[in-house]
Image: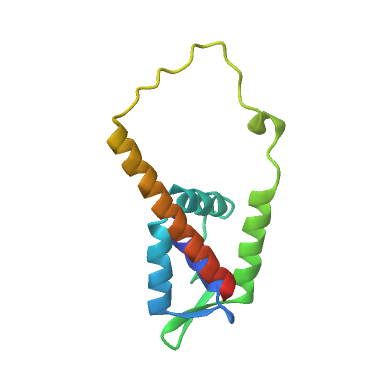
Amino acid sequence: MNFQVTVLKILVSYPDGFAVMADLKRDMAILATSGRDWADRTKRLAAHVPDLDIFSQKLVERLNGGWRITGKGRALLDFMERRSRRPQSVAEAAPCRSTAPSVLVISLPEQSASRRSERRQRRRAARERVAVRIQQR
């Protein structure tokens, strides 16, 4: 998970772009444990701005026990999101078709498969709760 992109995404979800440290830490913990989807998404966004530094670039300012995203921070986040939404080139989008034999899949015991399924469902529910909270702000 890319910490700096996550901070920008959390702050932009708050009404004035300001969050106290307790809220930031709570939201960060939720997103950090929400699974690979969030980590992959932040890595894709961060790839568009490899030298990202939210404080020295004045994208986030510290005040009154919390952090607030600046207009410059909102603009950069919008830029990163627009870049990641661009359609892939044809070469990237079309998977390579190979004549190689299929990969052998080993089935795992039923008990561990059901545990994994339950964990996936719990993670999905947690991500949905965070998304609802973010949309409500």
